[in-house]
Image (cartoon, rainbow, N blue to C red; front, side):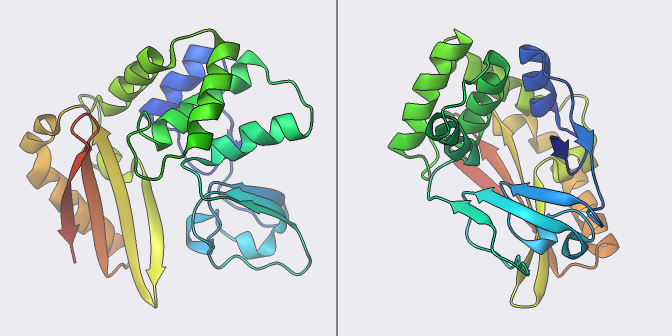
Length: 232
C-alpha cells in the first residue's frame, strides 16, 4: 500500500491530479508496521518510531544513512538522479507492465529530481527512463516538465511555513542537528518580497525543533542558480 510521510505539496498535487492518481494515505508513525523506505534511508527523515517498525526493503539514490535492521533485507541504492529511475528499471527487470498512471508518477519524479536534466546528479540512465516513460504517457516530457515545475514554483497561496517545509529534511552532522530545505521557482524575484518572512519562519522552526541551524536553498530552475538562507 502506498503511503506518504506527510502532507503532499503543490507539485505532487499537480502530478496526481494530472494522471488521475489518488492521494496516498498519510502515515506518521511506523510502530508495528511493515515498511519499505523509498527515497530515504536515514532515521531522522523517516516516520516516527521507525525503529519499532519491521523494515522490509529500501530503494534509494542518496548516500547510505543510519538505518539498521535485525535481519538481511533487499537494499537497492544507485548513484542516479532519482529513485524513480531505479524503480522504473525494476519494473522491466521483473517483467511487470507499467500503467500510464505509474509511468506518469515516475516520469514526474525523475523530471523533478533532475530539474529537467539540469541537475549535476542527472545520469544517462535517468534520461533513458524518461524517454521510455514518455512513450507510455503519450506526452512531450519537456512541455509536461515545465508545466509541473511551474505549478511547483507557484507560491502565491503558500504561507512562509509552506515554503520552508515544502521540501525539508532533518540531518545529523556528527551530532549537530539541522534542518535543510529547498524551494524551486522559475524566477527568484518572486521570493524577494518574502525573504524577511521566510527567515523569521526558519528561526521559528529552528527553535521549535531544537536544531543548531536551518538552511534553505532558493533555487532558480531556469538559471540553474541558488541563493542560500541560513539561521543558527
